Length: 115
Length: 114
Image (tube, rainbow over all chains, first blue to last red; front, side, top):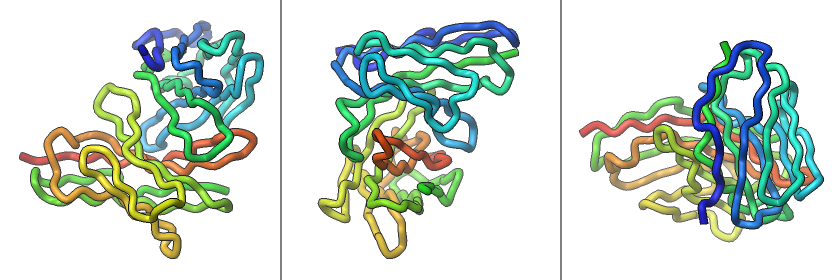
């Protein structure tokens, strides 16, 4: 199993450009989520999905869109990038979210810089 | 509201000496608590988790943590540091609000001196 994979590893955008961060998992996990990591702030939840066709907002959803058409994939879209979106983005997955003690499995991250 | 405070942003120890990374939490619910580790330029890996079964939790690589409800703490310890322990460590509260939500602390960077 590859686990959780993310592409690209690095990306530089100009303000106003759009792009999609890709996330895929091959563990047949129902739950997938996106976090951003900023210095001194830990990770913050952007959006999450409890299954194909179901998404919801997390703590910091503004400026980001998601969709979940398959169990395996959960892309994160930036429609008009802003410098405040410079961050490291992590995708995570979990078998289910019916309990609070499920481990979430994290991808390697995408480092995004917006100029 | 749930929150996590990691009391030290940076901890530096010598190889072979004990490690203590401190974490206090606040939760309206009975939380599950995790410690994750992030090595440089890598994703996050679960070290250990508390799920109310036992207050002393053992994890991978010799780490353990003790849940103290009266002190709302979940400190991470290791008896003897190794160079490979140098990394960023995150204390995490996990709750169910519709679905599982993770609330992260700010992180503690652990440096190991030879």
